[in-house]
Image (cartoon, rainbow, N blue to C red; front, top):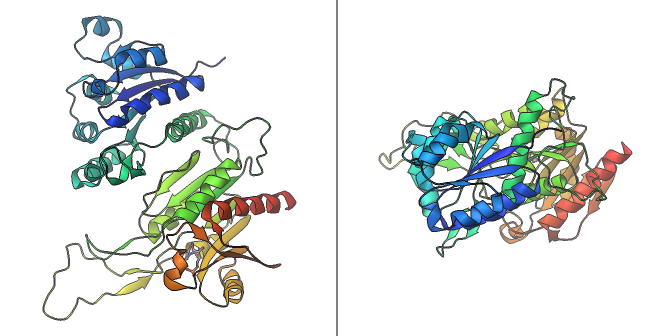
Length: 428
Ligand code: C5P
């Protein structure tokens, strides 16, 4: 029998440290082993005793333990792990890692390791948004560290925004996904879809019906940002909610899901492989790089135009006349997929329409050579709050006709759409 995977869990000093206890429970439940390193600040929030009891392993807190350094040195600690997880990863820990500082056990292990590291940030929203933190995260990602997106919501400090620790279940899904990726990379014989299509999915009861089992579903979501200069960009009101809901529903239905997301603050649904992008061109590259896929659902509100040559420096107000803005057309990602030699078998586009919805959607279906258009009815004041709101009102337009669905929560639209996709694939 294969040796169980082993996680080294580094717990930083934040209020979210208590959730590490739940994460340990999930890691153990999945059959993996775990050993904890607790920082000095982390020990203010959770005790070594709790972690030792849950992990059934010794908890390491200091670099200066003679006993540890003879029995289990800091190098050994990192070497025995298949994955190092930092949860919560505080702004301070991330900053030290980005700067290569090693002044306690946790940071020394992190500097000494060549094992894959997954950082799960949690901090106050302003700390998360601070330029220094964002710079450090960009550096860490360049260095090959996986940095999860924090969730958005009410924070322990009373503020609202991105910075909350993702749910332990989502962290566990990410851990499984990363370990499966490693395992897939070791396999010499990959099938045509690369790694096992079930990698990273949430756990299912054996009798649960999974209509998209074994399928790869590619989803785009959110807006794109097209830079004008280093501080300004062209954007739109898309929240990404509908696309994220479809990615979540497809994963629940058993698919391997790749979600290419524009700039949005939404948590990554469990079992979904997320690729963050900013511009339409980056989105296009990520979409094409994710092929082959059985199904592609292009929900993103891609900017049709981008600034021809974004300024390298901030554009200054000069005199009375505004600086002219030259625009150039972005690639049409959906139409590009339709022409691609690896065209997904079922290609679905979205369209926001305010009138003659079926007629316009049908025309778009032909123009973009896709199989279905999901047309959002955005008539009414400010798009009737479909864009950015929680509900959606859609028509499903196919080559065989169209269906009008009643106004529904976006999560329900997603579930029904995924059920329709399942039926279509079953009949194909
Ligand atoms: O042409 P329009 O923007 O109305 O088409 C909407 C559909 O086309 C959506 O599915 C959207 O994701 C996709 N699209 C795209 N690339 C673009 C513009 C739109 O993939 N540049």
